[in-house]
Image 1 (cartoon, helix red, strand yellow):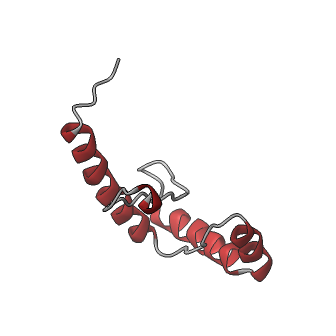
Image 2: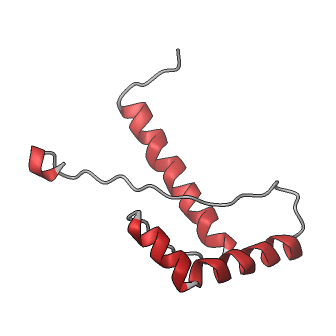
Length: 86
């Protein structure tokens, strides 16, 4: 985008695994631990790297914070651009 003269442009793509809101914390923590173990494997990292992806993993709260920030960010974009549903 910078090559086209567009400045202050930042769009991230991320993937996450979500569970229903009433999922017991012990289950969320167990799945989170398994996903973090998988993402730490060199073979998995290599495959993701070939696709230009960066495996980060982390605590469930980290993803919740990312979602909350992105909701605010994109809500502002929609409002400022006066985007409406059809």
